[in-house]
Length: 180
Length: 197
Image 1 (cartoon, rainbow over the protein chains, first blue to last red):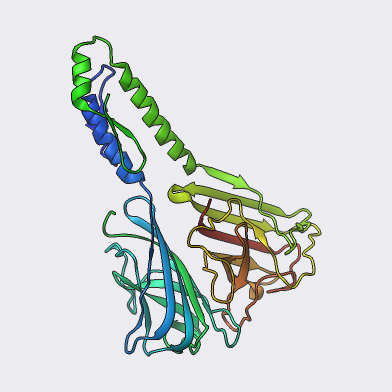
Image 2 (cartoon, rainbow over the protein chains, first blue to last red):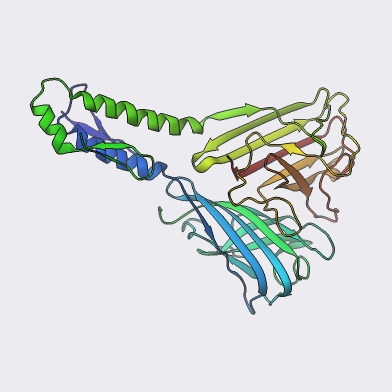
């Protein structure tokens, strides 16, 4: 009796109704394939907040991510500027837990996509943020693109002068290069 | 019979050598295979049922849990369960009739269809916490009053919406008179993604 391999998950299916002697081995293969696709992974990570010229210091960063299927992750990030925060200088960048898929364009003057949403809080002014989205600056780092009269990346003084007790939080979903 | 469970879903894999031996001594299909198939299909089915779309009717509450009387408002909601207890939620209000929006300055509280997993990463609105998990759009009486917002959890079962500052707009968490005085004809839509219980 012949078998056919399904196009997406690679499951082995018999072509007819008669029992197939090697069914146990084939079912073993199928079980492994299903298990690998459907498994769930959740993990925490510590996002690195850096700036292009001088890195900020004295903040607490936490991140959490969930694997959904082999090549998709959902990520939540929270960064709190602690007492004595130094804002550094240059565009802010935040590390990713899993590398982006190469099909996600790196942001330039003519390209870039938004795959997440951020909220920025200016504690001294007690004000919420501009509209801010997440975009890629490298396969393992993102920048935040904010509306501030015109589109700018978040940096040490955009959209406000970052200081202690300010907050930055975002969530995003993106395809990953590696299946994990 | 020797079986090996897969590491994540626990699917049972039969020992091929043993099955072959049984098969050679029995003209019928070994019964154990039926049992394995049943167990495994049930595991897969149990898993797959979480993929179903559900509908629910969004509501708005005051801080004390009293639901606002939204009169003829059409409230529609959909949510979907995904692996890892992930929950994706969409909701929309088309305010109609003579809806009451209360007078509370504490803002609108929106119940979630599935509670947030408080043992997980999501934390709640506080001076140093409260991770954004969604976004919202508000349509007021004029185009100029349209506003975007973000969804932040307040409690395991409720969230609040903060407006965003853009084009000179001021920021608030939305309530009866913010970002505009809510009335019939206005609309509110939101989505959120979080880890549920």
